Length: 112
Length: 112
Image 1 (tube, rainbow over the protein chains, first blue to last red):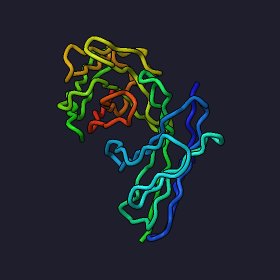
Image 2 (spheres, rainbow over the protein chains, first blue to last red):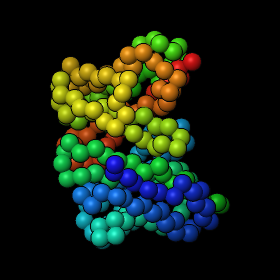
Image 3 (cartoon, chains in turn green, red):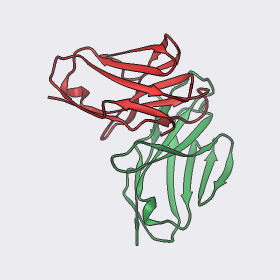
């Protein structure tokens, strides 16, 4: 059973701070890693993907991957109240037929 | 939402009745997926399709069937709805099966 673990939160940060969201996974064969943002009552929205060890930056978002430690994280710089949402981590193997396995999500609250 | 339409958006049905949910895409993507999302369980894959008439089971496929007769349409059928199938159902698409998924707006199903 492939597992993806996230702290459910809520993670509360003040406006302007850095929010750090973490995710661990059990399958060492995982090759693709994704972060989704889901507002309450809405569908998940893909915000970041990362495939190799290291950091990947996109605007205020940075995804970090460490395959040796089976750990992926998402940093949100200059957090805004509009970033308040649930963030889902998802991992996938190297075969197109592999399922995308989701973590339970971390609820982020950014306080003005 | 990446040209994905789910119908209906909300449905209330009685235990024992058959229910069909529809997912329609305008992106001509090869891969289509049905997920359910429940508190405490996150997003779980029900079935997916990798082409017309080509489908496979996900981790929670019992009680569900799917059909894909055209590239753009993927139907999810609950043969005989049970209260445990009360959930939010999301359809998702992927062009290659390797990248991230793009989700539809979801269908909230209540089985009474």
